[in-house]
Length: 117
Figure (cartoon, rainbow, N blue to C red):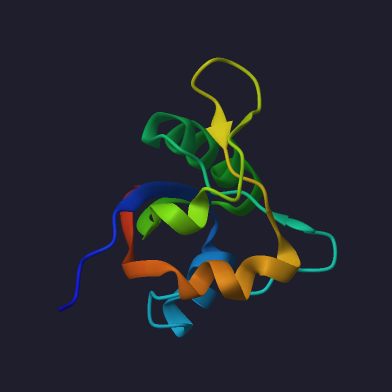
């Protein structure tokens, strides 16, 4: 008997370079962090992801994308929710060295839900 595990939907604002790497990974995983990126930051709400993609990624790389993906909720419970500003500015801080484990708990594909140029 197989039981479906509960999942949590996360969003990730991203630029074109990171998105190309996700595409190369068949929309199933996030690429390893660069040395200057010790933490992977998925966010807990779509509005916050849209603001970052539209207001920051477009300015810095000409395009911004918002991705949506599901992760096993039980696995995510090891990462406390971080409030990075206002009440709705919530994110998880996943250490770079744990990203392979994080990727192994993604359920389904990473989807692009918004694009800004």
